[in-house]
Every structure is written in structure tokens, then in C-alpha cells.
Image 1 (tube, one colour):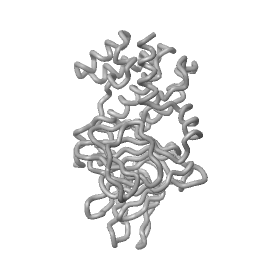
Image 2 (cartoon, rainbow, N blue to C red):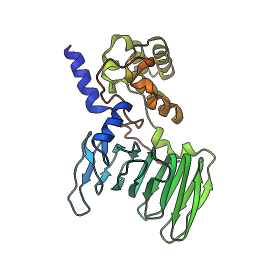
Image 3 (tube, rainbow, N blue to C red):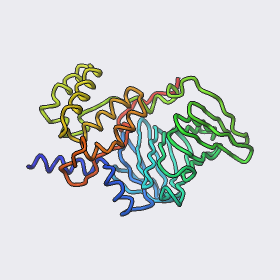
Image 4 (cartoon, helix red, strand yellow):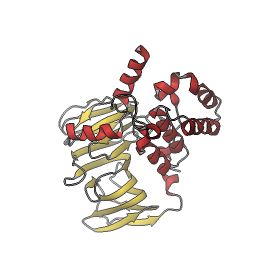
Length: 309
């Protein structure tokens, strides 16, 4: 019983469930929550305020600034269900957080790298940079801003309108655009767009992030396979377990998402994370109370993010 209570507390503090997201949105609209921090992250309530240490589960509102330091990453989830992940030495301002349908979410990335996935109605999310503003029409993309304000947008899926006072381009899946202060955006096609964003997928599946998998004897073969670097074998063991066991813990589907993300299978990772089976495993109601049982697909612990090749 004590173990179950500890498991519940860990999940309630660390991860999200889809059903819970709806309740969260109703209870705390126009907000964002820090889902994970690896290394050091900081925030300040306004531009003139001092920086303070950020923490996981912290609630943020419009006007807040956030930054990551050396060898650090941070992941956030907005109440409109948009997700963002910051790479090291990145900073952005949350200008406004909308409801995803009638009001806008506006974010200003001033430097660094961010990966973002949007859920709002197309056109209800904007990301501003020194070089141009991105009007988002879905689904996921990467934005990079260097110290000179030069901005690079890479669209992995969906469509983004990228514009400044001198011009505009429409950037679609597998395309990239570059914008600099004083110059119109220019578009270019990429042969392997995901190779340009290895920092997003430089990720390993780690069962220790999920207590009921890290401690359950039934998952011991999976843990041993990963310890021996037999990743494909471990993934096959998990897939088989989820297929056969209707009572498998919701965290099993999240670990499956980790495996997909590590393999660069972004769509599969998203499907695993957002699948209703996360909160209704194999169609059966999760026996636990409606806790936060889904985390974001971004890994919280990849210190060696690496630069683009």
C-alpha cells in the first residue's frame, strides 16, 4: 500500500494525463507549466526582475521570461496544449497564452534553440524572433536564433508562415527558412530535415523515469536488455508486453514513446503519448484516480545535445 501511494505521488507530480489536461485547462487557463528541467533553468516575472531558479511543476503566466543555462534543457506544456522544449543557452518570453481556439498564444524566442509542437486552432500560435515572426498552422518545428538575431526555421510537419516587414514565405514540411534583421526571409528545401535537429531526438529510453517500470519484477528483462545496450530487444519486449497485458501500466505506453523518439519516429512517439490508451490502457479505465500520467515526449536529460552537422 505504501509503495502504491509513493507511485501515485510520483506520477501526480511528474506527468500529465489527457483527461487531466482538460481539467487543468479549465482550472488554470492561460498558463504554462514546466514539465522537466535537466541542468539549470531560470525565470523572471518581468524584463526588469532578477532571475530565479526554475523548478519542475512551476506554473508560468504571460509576461514571464524563461532561460536555460549551459548543458541544460527545459520542457513546458501550455494550457492550449502546445509544447515547447528549449535547448541549452536559450531564452524566450511568454507574451500571451491563449485558449487554443479564440485567443492567441504568443512566444518570443530571443536566442537559442526550441522545438515546438502546436495543438491550437491554426493561426492561434505565433513565435516571434529578432529576424521574423512565425504564424503557426501546425504541427511541429524547430526555431534557432543566434547572437546576431539570425533566425532559422525548420518545419518537420505542418505549415508555418514566416514573415517580417520585408517579405514572407510559407514553410512546409521538410523545408527551412532563414531570416535576419533587415532582410526578407528566404526559403530552402532540406533533403533530411530531421538530421538538422538531432538535438531533439538525441534521446535514450530510460525506464528509471517511471517508478512502476523501474521497480516491477515483470519489467526486469527489459531493464537488463537496456543495461546491456540491447535497445531493439528491450523495445520488442515492451511491445510484446503491451500487446498481451491489458493491465499494463500507463507508463508502459510512455516508455514506448521514448523508444520511438530515440529512433527518430516522431509521429509514432506522438501517437504513443497522445493515445487514449495512456489513460485507458487497452480500453480499460485506469484504476488510479485521474492523475497526471502523461509526460511530454521531449527527453529531460540529454546533456550532449550536440550541434548540427
